[in-house]
Image (cartoon, rainbow, N blue to C red; front, side, top):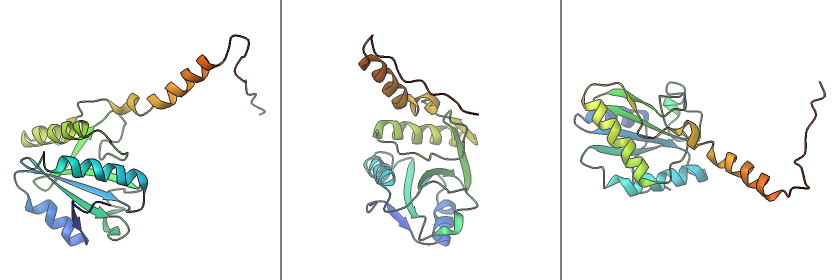
Length: 168
């Protein structure tokens, strides 16, 4: 999967990656090799790696190989992206309520570049919490709403959607 990303093979390597960078954002992608969502996110991070190399460095850490941070960073999702700057965890408000990490795949490389750049600009000004350029509270729910709208349009005027009764 993320073969072009620098792979961190132990907890010590993760710590050293966070400690070593003074001027760039450290992006750590915690993931499982076999998960399809992780593969999508890994591909996106590979595409942006060269474009953000002036202000960010991106690492990959397999959650099965390095379970040291699973409890500390609450890495319960199959794919998680976290940001660090000068040995400090940088939180990002994405509108989802979880400001510590990104735990879903982002397919658009421009979105990922915007997020990393926003983290860098905020962190370099000393902010520990930055606000994402996009609000993901509604974006992640949009496909299910579109499915419902399409379903209503596909039903003819004579057909009505099924109603479910709650038998309590």
